[in-house]
Length: 224
Image: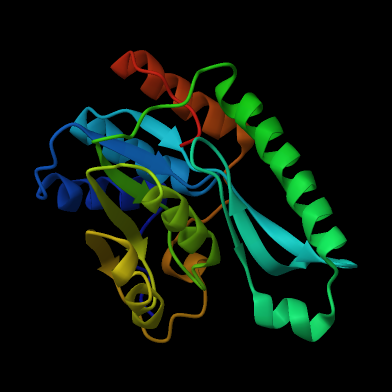
């Protein structure tokens, strides 16, 4: 299997050229933290565009928080996605679902404050939005983020990722106006397999990149 990208920054620079060719007027770049932020930063820098976040949290099943029964996206247009078939098959109660939504909503707010402080949400109304991650495997978090964005009044939504399996991307076509992916490797296995360096992005890196973007553009940055 050929490694396609040296690191997230390199992937972001390559992706930035592809996004630039769309010639979007006054785009807003939205990243899925944490790994999507270094990629999105390069796009925002290339386009001179503001950089923001879409915060998404997995909703865990009882006793197995790593096993998702759905996900939620926070911000100005909050959205929840629930796997109703799984919920029924496991007999998960409405009380647990609500408690998990409340818990993860609080965690998203904590992370928003950590990453962005008191900066008010960016208004994406009438804007061309570009949603960025460092890659897609199953696509659960991307889907709920796109669902949230579709409830906004954005002029258009573009999904831009360096690498993804073809079958995952095909499921997003009804949710976006445009889609950019640089690599469709087979077999796919995992996002990290297609980077030479795929260290975990730290909170400190996210905070620093968002602060740099904020100073450069002079615009508000917050969860979308």
